[in-house]
Image (cartoon, rainbow, N blue to C red; front, top):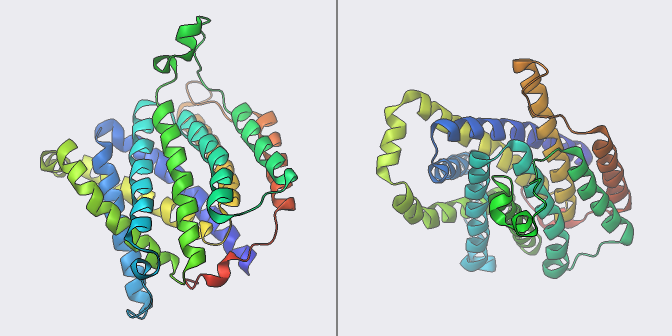
Length: 324
């Protein structure tokens, strides 16, 4: 049953990622304010998670995250959530879906195992590390990215020569790794449920982000969004798809280790890029759309995933999680 539930969450997460990336891309084209999009996305997640807890009628006297681990750790997760949201939207606003997901996922795969060892004390075998390396290599082989063709040493290594969206995508990936490992440590070390934890995380994130949003965008931008019904629909759609992806991904994280989550995240990135090429082909024909992932890269990624999961030890971290 546990494997079936994890597989179901994985499918929901993958589909939500496709919807999120394309709804966000459409939203930032007509409404180039990623801060507002991130804020609305956080509010929608808080509403959905709070409603879920209310409908489940959990005991309000249950141990709280604040009492168990302190506000500082929860605020740290919230800061990572904010940074990942905003940087992801900045990357999509200035670059392609392929660049954003490839760079973001690569940074996440590289950073998550290191953080898991340092924070959670998790040990990875040699074959698992090799599997992660093959997955990372396969990810880059799969996608054709427009890297600079200049042979000038200074121009080649200058940040301004990199494809648009690379830097915010990299920051987003690092924040995702920190968020996953920190949240997992809280779930493992306390009896708090994933819904209770996520509600507090997004609530703190909203409070912390409101002053930044007020300074950068502010009520005038919000009024501009409300004034246009089409823009308002795109913003709400982007927020709902973000909540769909984020909540499914967090539910999957609550059942597996952070490195396993990172490997699934790599496959998710290829799934989104492949879906993008299929959708573009259906809309535009064979010309003008993003390139589909290369078969060699897909094969390498599959080998790396199989090697990692075959050598991965059985997870027992769900014993302290009372959310199911």
